[in-house]
Length: 420
Figure 1: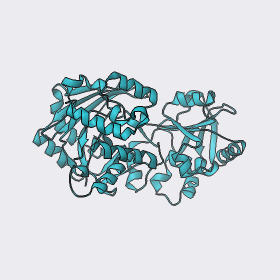
Figure 2: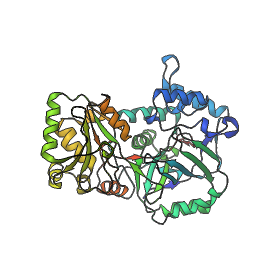
Figure 3: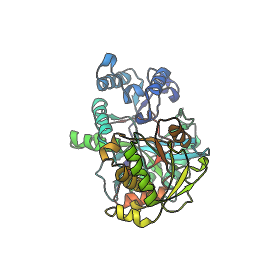
Figure 4: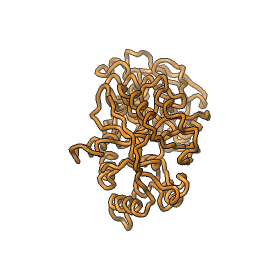
């Protein structure tokens, strides 16, 4: 079972920084240079200065993060809470599908453990580069700056019901993301509420939705420091799998650098393993009601949108015979096995380093990438249902990278978790 604890939070002091709008930011791995510059201009105290640091005059970025983080604490920009608390969080958002929803959850700290049944499970494979970066940043700041997003089973919504009464008051802070998501947080120090949340999760398993690199970094850091202490816990945002505001959207695959040989191999695999049907360009993203393995496809060579249906599940079963049954029913897993690794000969290293492969979270952008030449071809994915994510994790398997797009992201800068 996962151990859930309240936080003795390190947080921004509103009387110094003003609104959280000015100092919060999206997770580091979705920020490009232009957005980082725009965030830094909003406030000298914006969290990108420590979470996505840049060394002055080409200096060490991690040293910059360390010195800035310490200076902010000395100046009262960041203050340490005396009393442990759980922080309730709501996110009012409009999804890529145009629908408005509210996601509910809470920020706390969770004891770092090895992956395993009944404790904490990953759901996607990770790459080494980001883990090394996050480890160096953790050593420099000795804090968790950005929360990991995890899910847990709570069909009765008992954890949220314990916190919800406290959200009737004015929130401690509000931050609106660049995508328009309104994030509100409430500090909940009531012992009965905290114990109720802990009791609800006392026998629950946590499934990491977003932040695998940060969690694995936390494991390495905890062992590196050794012994017991604050470093044995990691900052998490927890959300029920049954929360009505929990949604997953797809991430489409873009193929680049298709040589004549690779293009021929791709065409051969598609013709051999899939039934292909012409469709309208507006139908490229498959719908949730379509059965079997289904993909949308478009390339720049004939520019004819097509729907691809795997001819028979036995094709996936034979190709992925060493994988559990839930994994063999994943669109992303079958595409990776048959097309990326099979037809195109990509290795794990190619996939990790985007050699011949890129991604887009927007259907129109993915289509435009083909038509304007940024990509040679695109596979359009449907969203992976939450239940399928859970089934694959319970089978002890990790999904291919970018199999899920949990929206919205959880902002960085709402609260921090000191590790000493």
